[in-house]
Length: 96
Image (cartoon, rainbow, N blue to C red; front, side, top):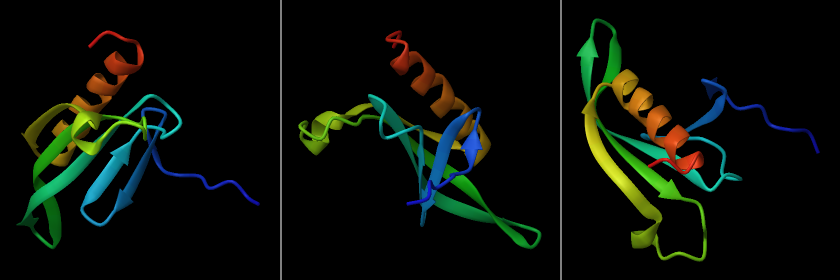
Protein backbone atom coordinates (compact mmCIF):
# COMPACT_ATOMS: atom_id res chain seq x y z
CA UNK A 1 0.00 0.00 0.00
CA UNK A 2 1.42 3.40 -0.93
CA UNK A 3 1.89 6.17 1.62
CA UNK A 4 -0.33 9.26 1.33
CA UNK A 5 1.52 12.57 1.35
CA UNK A 6 -0.54 15.39 2.86
CA UNK A 7 0.21 19.09 2.41
CA UNK A 8 2.17 20.43 5.36
CA UNK A 9 2.54 23.72 7.22
CA UNK A 10 5.78 24.19 9.16
CA UNK A 11 6.52 20.49 8.74
CA UNK A 12 3.20 19.19 10.10
CA UNK A 13 0.34 17.64 8.10
CA UNK A 14 -2.59 19.89 7.21
CA UNK A 15 -5.68 17.91 6.15
CA UNK A 16 -8.95 19.46 5.00
CA UNK A 17 -12.42 17.99 4.88
CA UNK A 18 -15.08 20.50 3.89
CA UNK A 19 -14.87 23.48 6.23
CA UNK A 20 -12.68 21.68 8.78
CA UNK A 21 -8.90 21.44 8.78
CA UNK A 22 -6.80 19.23 11.01
CA UNK A 23 -3.27 20.37 11.77
CA UNK A 24 -0.77 17.85 13.12
CA UNK A 25 -0.42 14.11 13.11
CA UNK A 26 -3.10 11.86 14.58
CA UNK A 27 -0.22 9.66 15.79
CA UNK A 28 0.82 12.46 18.18
CA UNK A 29 -0.81 13.17 21.54
CA UNK A 30 -2.45 16.40 20.27
CA UNK A 31 -3.83 17.91 17.05
CA UNK A 32 -5.57 21.18 16.26
CA UNK A 33 -8.93 21.34 14.54
CA UNK A 34 -9.73 24.54 12.64
CA UNK A 35 -13.37 25.14 11.64
CA UNK A 36 -14.16 27.83 9.08
CA UNK A 37 -17.23 29.53 10.53
CA UNK A 38 -17.70 32.18 7.83
CA UNK A 39 -16.16 33.32 4.55
CA UNK A 40 -15.99 36.60 2.66
CA UNK A 41 -15.56 37.40 -0.99
CA UNK A 42 -12.26 39.00 -2.04
CA UNK A 43 -12.34 39.57 -5.77
CA UNK A 44 -13.03 36.19 -7.33
CA UNK A 45 -11.97 34.20 -4.25
CA UNK A 46 -13.87 33.17 -1.15
CA UNK A 47 -11.55 33.42 1.87
CA UNK A 48 -12.01 32.32 5.47
CA UNK A 49 -13.20 35.12 7.73
CA UNK A 50 -14.01 33.64 11.16
CA UNK A 51 -12.12 30.49 12.16
CA UNK A 52 -12.62 28.46 15.35
CA UNK A 53 -9.49 26.77 16.74
CA UNK A 54 -9.54 23.74 19.07
CA UNK A 55 -6.49 22.05 20.58
CA UNK A 56 -7.54 18.43 20.99
CA UNK A 57 -6.16 15.31 22.63
CA UNK A 58 -6.09 12.34 20.24
CA UNK A 59 -6.74 9.75 22.97
CA UNK A 60 -9.83 7.82 21.74
CA UNK A 61 -10.54 6.62 25.31
CA UNK A 62 -11.51 10.16 26.35
CA UNK A 63 -15.12 11.31 25.88
CA UNK A 64 -15.48 13.98 23.15
CA UNK A 65 -16.10 16.82 25.63
CA UNK A 66 -12.83 15.98 27.45
CA UNK A 67 -10.76 15.88 24.26
CA UNK A 68 -10.88 19.66 23.78
CA UNK A 69 -8.04 21.23 25.76
CA UNK A 70 -8.20 24.82 24.52
CA UNK A 71 -10.36 26.78 22.07
CA UNK A 72 -10.60 30.24 20.52
CA UNK A 73 -11.88 32.07 17.46
CA UNK A 74 -9.73 34.19 15.14
CA UNK A 75 -10.20 36.41 12.11
CA UNK A 76 -8.61 34.89 9.01
CA UNK A 77 -7.12 31.50 8.27
CA UNK A 78 -3.48 32.62 8.40
CA UNK A 79 -3.87 34.03 11.93
CA UNK A 80 -5.72 30.87 13.03
CA UNK A 81 -3.04 28.54 11.62
CA UNK A 82 -0.30 30.58 13.31
CA UNK A 83 -2.08 30.22 16.66
CA UNK A 84 -2.62 26.52 15.95
CA UNK A 85 1.11 26.04 15.36
CA UNK A 86 2.04 27.76 18.64
CA UNK A 87 -0.57 25.80 20.62
CA UNK A 88 0.43 22.49 19.08
CA UNK A 89 4.15 23.08 19.57
CA UNK A 90 3.64 23.97 23.24
CA UNK A 91 1.29 21.03 23.85
CA UNK A 92 3.65 18.52 22.25
CA UNK A 93 6.51 19.93 24.35
CA UNK A 94 4.35 19.83 27.52
CA UNK A 95 4.56 23.63 27.89
CA UNK A 96 0.90 24.67 27.75
